[in-house]
Amino acid sequence: MTQASCHGGPALQDPVPSRPQLVIAGNPNVGKTTLFNALTGSSAKVSNYPGITVEAACGKLTLPGGRIADLRDLPGTYSINARSAEEMIALDALIGLGGAPAPDAVIVCVDATQVARATYLLLQCQELGARCVVALTMVDEAAAAAPDPRALSAALGCEVVAVTARTRAGLDDLRAAIDRALPSCAPGSTRCARRCRPAGAPRPATAPSGPPPTTRSRCGR
Amino acid sequence: MNSLAETPLGRAVTVHAVEGSRAFRRRLLEMGLVPGTAVRIVTVAPLGDPLRIEVRGGQWSIRRAEAAQIQVQPR
Image (cartoon, rainbow over the protein chains, first blue to last red):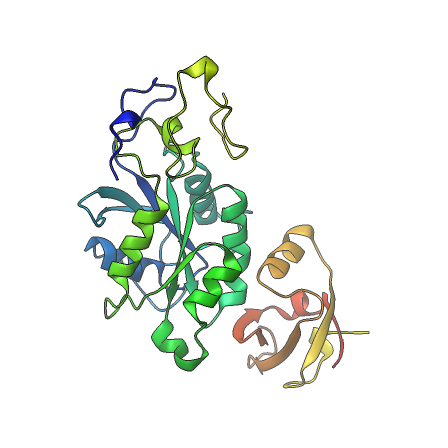
């Protein structure tokens, strides 16, 4: 898991966050804050109607293996085309504007009763180049109508974990999936070293002779 | 071609086109109200204005003026 070689790379960007940065994104009223509270032990306000979360809440999430990540809960949005102030907050957090670094992975909350509606935002997150993990929420509500996580995972091209945040079912699976989605280098590595390489790829050689960054690189400034 | 606002309560129709401002069209389209989608009016508020419509298993509340910008055809 930990690669010592990830440390000591050139400081290409600052400030460098010391922990992996995660965000929870999703449509309004799909259970993002309930999941956030369950994962971090926070008590952010939850209600059964949309529009409760209007700014990003922050918490800490312990991943399998003891790694600690910063987790931010975002206001709900239907797309990355922001129209309202809280959608703008969600968009800025997803693409790394507004002071915070771009997330190392995005947990996309998908309401198991409304999967089709959520796929638009998920696709946009994937097109941004984010590492996505889908948390399929409200599985208990959808009951028999809930999609099969494995089939959905194959269709969407990212890991899908069914969770019921109220009863904490599936949370450990979700933590493990997040850990797999994160780049394998240790926290504290430079943002560029973390984001320019796919997870598990060897570290490029010294800068000039190194292989070109992948097409998803956004670090070419 | 009729608008959704003229559709009788409870009758399922198919979306043909969404008109109106760019922001409004984009909003409805990204929420899943794309041409070909089934939609029906579930409830009308007492004074006849906001309408509750059902789209893809979810329910939304929209203005009658907005519903008038959604062109529908019989299923």
